[in-house]
Amino acid sequence: MGLARLALAVLAVALVVALVVIGARALLGALDTPEPVSADRGTATPTTSAQVPTVRIECVAETCPLVTVRVPGGDVLQYRDMSRGEEVSYFEPELSVVLSDAGTVRVAENGKARAPGKAGEREAFTVRGGP
Image (tube, rainbow, N blue to C red; front, top):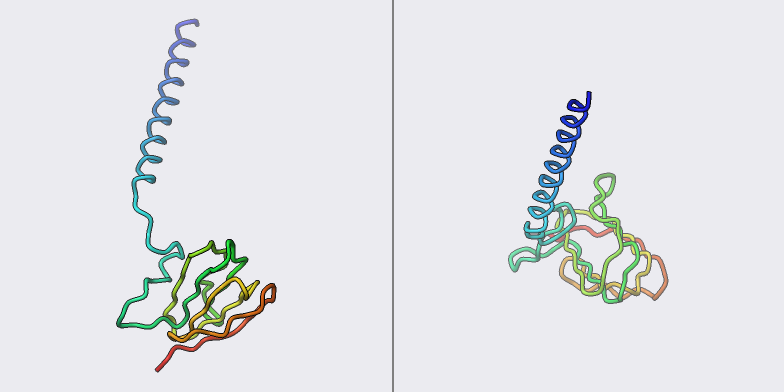
């Protein structure tokens, strides 16, 4: 009976070591993967000189609380806080934007600066793409 327990213990230790090795390799692989340009599930793309984004939002405060961008009646493209200097651009034909604190962001609609919002005030608006 002692030999069976010993064999079972050795097997259990071997499985634990294998799991640790597999987990470490997966973690290192994830850390070595370069981050995408945008963390918005691939819907925000970098601004190109040939195409003007429907809306571009830049965080100008230390933290910009809850910035929401969605396609009206459709997908939510962004629903999160932003950090200073972070910018996102969206090129969909029509977008609904909700800013929890309109004074913390700089917004451009179809390449033109939108009037700055008041600090601490919530602002909601719809943007339609240019011709």
